Amino acid sequence: MRHGDGRVKMATTPGQVTAAEPLRIILRDVPWSAYKALRDTPTNDPIRMTYLDGILELMSPEFLHERGAERLGMVVRAVARAFDVTYQGAGSTTFRRRRRRPLKGHGCEANASFYFRDRAEQVAPKKAIDLRVDPPPDLAIE
Image 1 (tube, rainbow, N blue to C red):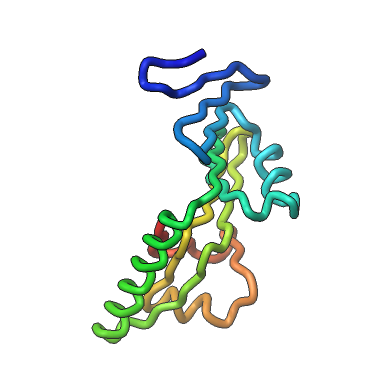
Image 2 (cartoon, rainbow, N blue to C red):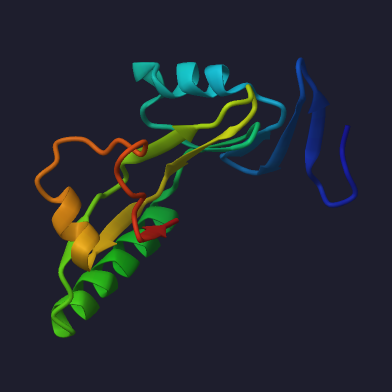
């Protein structure tokens, strides 16, 4: 079915799929377990996924998207150095945290992410970030 604005909407089980624009798909009513299984499948590594309480966005970034994010990351680094702010880049790390109900949770894969000041020093020596005990990034660029 086509909407007046050109989007395509298809019924699926358990929710609905909406193609909002090229290379971007939004799935609704997706259980946390399905998101986690999709994210943990190695063949899905090139696909960016964002999950928030049952809504899963799948995206395959294009050059223009990546170029803009890279430029913003360079600005963040330059400003942090200019103002002598300690920072730790976390790149496009997947950050996710489950909540109690099946559709509840957060998963984010920013193009670039950063920790600043005390938080930067806190996460710098770590090999992995665990959001059950570690803070999320202070800044995520998407």
